[in-house]
Length: 615
Image (cartoon, rainbow, N blue to C red):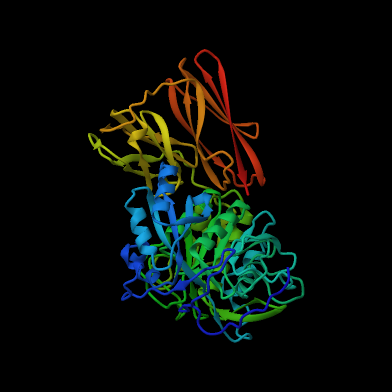
């Protein structure tokens, strides 16, 4: 991968607002700051993310709207809604059901308002732009003082890491020729341009990578927190160190799909960004912990953050909160963040300050803990980090230091004996709306509440006992189309399944569909795949839905992926909707065949096949 002409870096990045020209191949397009006095169409829709004033001040891509349809939303109705709003789908993140729409500059709010009115859309988001959170400093300042402060040498007496524990750096890329990083990279991808060139275009990613895993005991340069854990490198930014929410989400998802255990994201402010949270949720389901920098705005925020990610503030060398470090309820813990010496472009080294460089210290410590005990859940590793932090400030967890300063020695010592808490309790689940007795005449949103100590894997809405749609992200909201059913009374229930395999079905809610299709629930024998469409390109968790009909009565259904049986279950009646959640991460690129084998009450079998492609 060749080097490119690189822009100079100087000054504080946290408040940088830029206007970039329209760019192809994943470029940012037109970026604009938000002006409260601007009467443009962007103000015509109240974007929920803007409830956080810190996020509301961020620049965003004027010509892109990020859309997450409700599970159960009709594909044809969505396509019509997009067309009527003069919006075009230009990209997708299938793992989090995200569609990126191209809209006319100045019409973002109007398009969002029109789509919101359809009742088909769960999330409408601006594509905010985030800056790499680093502040340049004297390159000779306090070289690697942070390692002794976190007890790294004591931790290394037990472990220096494991080749089985991959750490991903979602950033500006990496200088692959740097002598302290050569041989440390296990793979990478450029989600910004969608190609394999992850060479650093800004320098920030090279510094972050060196803090985590610079080659150690090689008589060269600096030491990493972990010596042996390999790096996965994701370039998600442009040449100015700016990355949009969708590119950061794509980087998180790619990393989790490649088996990363720890994913470092040194961009801010992300504590209120719903799209990045959705990606962090998906990564957590795949066994990864996302570590995010708190931000360099020097502000005390009010956002609570989200449990699927660990937010890290920065300390100076006196264990005081760095003057630039953000704080608030979202802070999980803190780490050294001033004068952090690390790898830089062109086989050089320098010191820098910022929460960008506190986060990778925590990411490296998480990797050391996981190296000791590789079977732990992400939530358990996060608890190791916070439970064994050095308390600072007000006793206990606070909004300034979170749980305290990360302690590598204590984390590694505790990881030896750590165990995931046994999950013997099934999830709780109920249908919050609609309520019993509701008369429904058109498209309706179904809101489901589900919770579990180890995490909810998925929630399925059932109509008259048959699966209708599946949601894998909280809050659990789906859309129901009564016209798919006969008019009259129907019973809605919800089934929640946790990661231990426990399932709970909610109490039924009887509603009346005032208008329906009038179609009989029984028809001729057959299998119809409802979604995804045949030949569709898919990634990550894929919910495959099909409708079965057999006049002799249904008995069993079996799902196979590429000829290998994955699930067998019972069905009944003469018509049924069935679904299967295929966790495709780790599957080879190319075509895969989903086979559905249905046996009826007489023993006769019917087979259906669906071909899907992993890019």
